[in-house]
Amino acid sequence: MRMQAELISCVVGSSSARISVGRRMRIDRPLLLGPEPNVNGGPSPIVSLLSPSLVRKTQASTDLDLFVGLVASENWALNVPSVNVVGRLNPVKATGAKMEVSITRPDDWHLHLRDGDLLQAVISHSAFHFGRGIIMPNLKPPIKTTAAAISYRESILKAIPTNCDFAPLMTLYLTDAMSPEEIKLAKESGVVYAVKLYPAGATTNSQDGVTDLFGKCLPVLEEMMKQNMPLLVHGEVTDPEVDIFDREKVFIDAILRPLIARFPRLKVVMEHVTTEDAVKFVESCKEGFVAATVTPQHLVLNRNSLFQGGLQPHNYCLPVLKREIHRRAIVSAVTSGNKRFFLGTDSAPHDRRKKECSCGCAGIFNAFVALSVYAKVFEEAGALDKLEAFTSFNGPDFYGLPRNTTKVKLIRSPWKVPESVPYASGEIVPMFAGETLEWLPSLV
Ligand SMILES: NC(=O)N[C@@H](CC(=O)O)C(=O)O
Image (cartoon, rainbow, N blue to C red; front, side, top):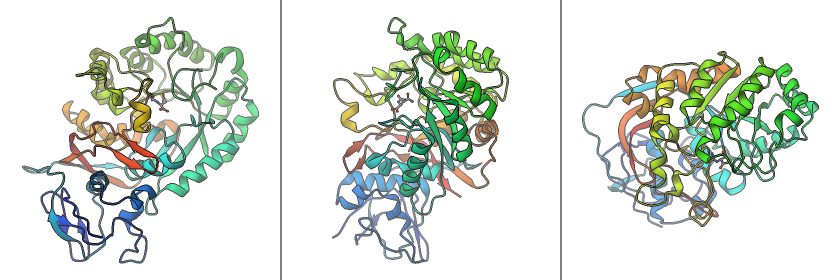
């Protein structure tokens, strides 16, 4: 079997090939299509990156796009000396001197990894870029117990590519029925790091969420405060009378302020903040007790992106994108260096068919592009010197965990995002599919 791949780049070393811009390559043996040992005897790093579905597929140009994206973004050594060079698929030319930023390996403090085929398809994208991820529990059925979290963690660990040391930090899904005993078990387990509050009906798989926080969950919140277990909040009310663009603002007044007044020593993370109101609220709270995660999409897109030239389902997430004034407030907050804000991608993959249909799911798959987007935002704000604290320090400091010790590099070099990521049951469309981004993450 012969595959012709035009790769965006390739630097060929003595016993390895590395991707860079401008060289043509022909992969003339099925090295991308099945597990082969590399020259050191271990599994090929490339093959271990590909999901089993990709390994089974042949000749699909999207596969090659994906491969190129992965390799380019990770600067992986191919470790296969017999790669020959011929063609070119994503011809993105680099010009001028390359700017580089080296930062401590980031963590993702809000991540949806899913399970089954989807987990297999998306895990490598997060595992490469991030050291740890706070794993959201909104599976079907949700992760409501420590026992379920332990078993979900095991399936994630099995799916992580062999040469990545990504650590999944598990969470529990808060329900009206959760007992304080469960919080004790969670703490003792050493693998559960937080509890997630989904108001029932607020977002994807939140049907089993909380219907009455103050009526049903006080003993659990009390125990969480005792155990120093953070509460992660999807901050939107679900009252259909409240306009969808106001749901975060109303949540702050109706739930968050009273919650914090009642439990001043409870650690609370307002997840994926989308409004100036949320930014001001978090800034007004005591540092170390209330913080916020910020997604790539809420930093670079406003609600116009939902309707640009027609309905754009791949820009639909919850909380929904807001007006430009809110986007700007969030950019100012994160680029100011305020320690209360840290990276949480909310990368939320859905099969293309579940996004492009009469009642599409909320969620943007952004693990691929997240670091590139964050770098662009800080660069444009003239705040690249504050990027590392946002991506790599503020999160672990808030959670009371050590900072990572390894580094990643961001190179100012254009690369093209694949149109889609195929997997065994379909395909996923990533954020900025088919577009060219400016910052290329790579391992140091
Ligand atoms: N962000 C989203 O739009 N979707 C998330 C759920 C969530 O975090 O709201 C998902 O699980 O798909």
